[in-house]
Length: 217
Ligand SMILES: N[C@@H](CCC(=O)N[C@@H](CS)C(=O)NCC(=O)O)C(=O)O
Figure 1 (cartoon, helix red, strand yellow):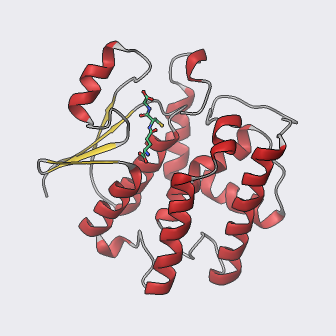
Figure 2 (tube, protein in one colour; figure 1 turned 135 degrees about the vertical axis):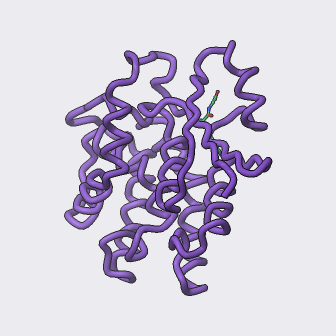
């Protein structure tokens, strides 16, 4: 197979990079990581050559550029249909795509108030009502999935939905978000995935915090 290159940015701050990277891992494909720091305006010209949206992640394969995380997820599913990125049954696939879409286009309050930052720990963080409503909705989605599919992941086995929600899991840890037992156990399970351990370890050794990135990213 032609070489796959995944362009990403900070492992500490970039939630979309984490999603794209996890999707590649879940697809079971060999890929080359290309890290571009997007905080420096000088790098934006370079990034434009790598990603038409100037955003990460961006996947390059066989002369094809795929940007935007949902498009990457669908592309990987086409490349590796047996990897199970989407559930086998049409109705369940529809639900999986729906909750991925909800993550992709929604939860703005959560994303801006609780930005991904794996190095940080905010014990007793005060979550404002708007972000709490997003957290409650996510917990409802997860609980419905557990009830329907019995865990241990959202659709039984790992799918693109778990990748889409993985950065939320890290935020729940960072900001000490109170969750019920099932949701808490799910978070622990996601953080215990070998891929998440590897990502977190790399995030923790990135250069010091960049203040301007301590926001939705
Ligand atoms: N809708 C895009 C969002 C990607 C996105 O916002 N990426 C952020 C990093 S997490 C980015 O590249 N930001 C660069 C910048 O704002 O300069 C996707 O699904 O991939």
